[in-house]
Image (tube, rainbow, N blue to C red; front, side, top):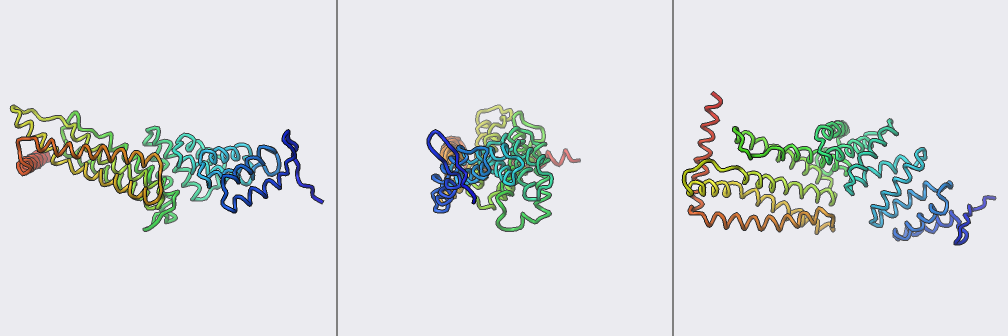
Length: 353
């Protein structure tokens, strides 16, 4: 005869199996928050008992189902650290990486990835992609572009080998990898500035634009997971790419001019040429907000997109007003732009000879 495990507490007897049964029933009924309380109580009453690891696991899953990802992360971390040899520890540590990424706890994400790799050298390709992606996001958050790139390429090799990036929807684990790739390319792009004005401005601008397009491509690949959270992050970043490029281009120092009209002509030509970047950024922010409203996504990235949208609308209005105040028509400004482009081409041809 098996006697149910009883734990004596100041508040009375606790039948661990009964607590599990009741919590499991609540979990199955969709009462995740109540189920989490039951599993937490089972662990608290018997933290070293035979069902302690299971209590942490089920409690973490219930907290996550209830939307309390912070507590879920803590429970998974407890399971992975307190019971490292338990059969449930492997999955728990993998979930720590994923949740840390979702919550943008980059250092915890990276450290958990390191621990997972050290503890489980026999990992499969999916586990490796998660761990390499976690390390990449940690390194890129620290500004370590080279370290991030190393881990990204390790993971991308596995993605290609197992054809996880075929046309259509991709796994969410690959979404975080492509987001990390977008971040690396974004950081490289934003290192290219135009003040002081580089001698080979046209070449430098082309390099910045190419990195922008490469970044956008990676962020767009991240959106293919059709996950609202990663799509909001990626969508905001794409809009931000165009917004920052516009800001940096408008910071280009004016060439020497002997009259105010020539200075105004240069200013107007620059505003006319690069105002399209504001339009692109605004369109991307609006698209991100529309997607978020449709899916119910309410993360901080949605708030960032909303703030950026308001700022871009003000910038759009300011650019139009600034151009309208100049003593030149838009046709005259366009002619000035064409002349500048022609001179730049001639200068490039001479330099190539």
